Amino acid sequence: MSGRKQYAALPFIILVDSIEVCLITSKESGRWIIPKGWPKKGMAPHELAALEAFEEAGLKGSADPRSIGSFHYVKRLDDGSEVECEVSVYPMLVEYQAINWPEQDQRTATWVQLKEAAKLVAEEQLSNLLRRFNPKLLASKKTT
Image 1 (cartoon, helix red, strand yellow):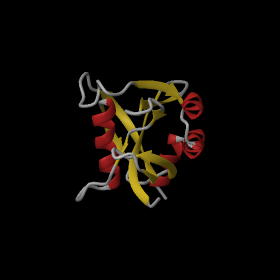
Image 2 (cartoon, rainbow, N blue to C red; image 1 turned 90 degrees about the vertical axis):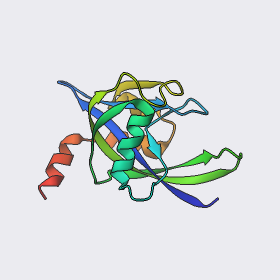
Image 3 (cartoon, rainbow, N blue to C red; image 1 turned 180 degrees about the vertical axis):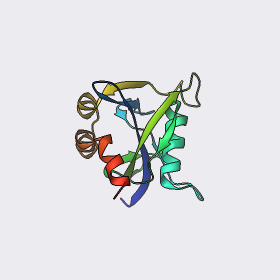
Image 4 (cartoon, helix red, strand yellow; image 1 turned 120 degrees about the vertical axis):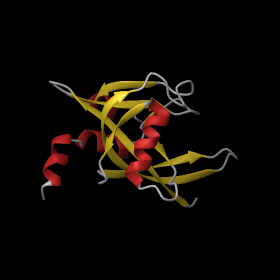
């Protein structure tokens, strides 16, 4: 299996007493994942992540241009073959969720607290990223 690169959004909102993230179901297996996609020519990774968040969950907001890490998983392609993917994750502060979006009939989207999201995703590396995620650190990194 040869490796392929993907880019993902970690869509989040900050509530008074918690941080919630939006998880979506994958089209094939129905497992909980975050919005992600293949690179597109002329599009920066964080811009692609934000585009995928809209197409897959109807989310609009600003994705940070700095990745908070990556995870690996094995994707089954349409022809039945498998490819290992490395997914760089870009945090995205969500401003709103649209009423209609391109893949709304193909996926379920849900908002959950970070701790719960870390339990729901199957990929251990993604789970670890969710456990460590702290949006307050994003602001402090911008000043350094």
